[in-house]
Image (cartoon, one colour):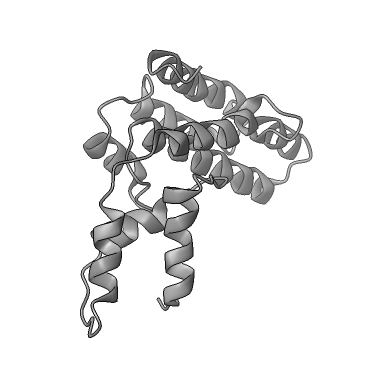
Length: 177
């Protein structure tokens, strides 16, 4: 993967200085910089960037991520769960899958933010959440598993609501709701 130095620095500035959230994966480039190993760094630029990336998770960023991602789960005119329901009604499994993936991206963005952990990216999210996050939504593993297994049928709404109820519990417990 090639990224310019300017782009990489901008990604860190976006989250660490301006506290700007994304819809899902808000802090994955920060995680990447913090956890990468430079194979060649003649000028020391990457080492300096990693030092900068070692700072604590900004409270303003946590709040921005929750504020951007939480309403679109099921409390907004274009909320993911409603989009999934519509896709089920029109028998559009690709759209169901696409919206479910987007919903999980926002869900995990919130989980990592509430715990003050940069987002590790799209792979092994349940495993990373369990290892990095002391505060998890009620029934995270079971909820995500049940939600994913329900995607082909009409129980997806029920399972998604159960999974999101656990996230509500976490946000109330950590004073984000």
